[in-house]
Figure 1 (spheres, rainbow, N blue to C red):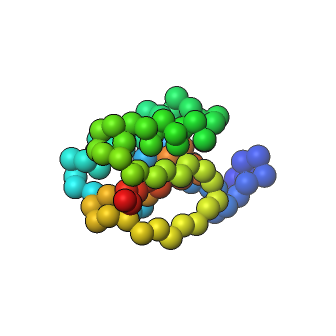
Figure 2 (figure 1 turned 90 degrees about the vertical axis):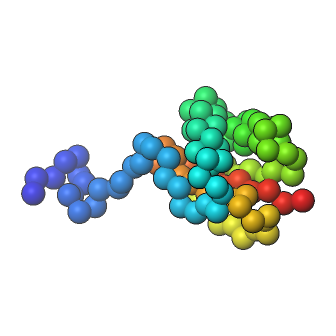
Length: 104
């Protein structure tokens, strides 16, 4: 196979341009609504993760009740306690990871 700009065929990095849900125990309807919200905020505030997380949290608090927590970033790990049916972990736009959960 031919080399393209110094990257061999087998060494190519896969970049997801769609939301890739890694883990969720939310109900299907709620998950679709939350994924749409997260994608919209991530596209709008792609250069500022802190603002993106704040806007997602504020919207979730208004729509689904208080005590939501949101982390937006790259290269982090997490272990959280959460209310059942209230966690979502997804990737968007390549390396951007978003985890949101409800814990009161």
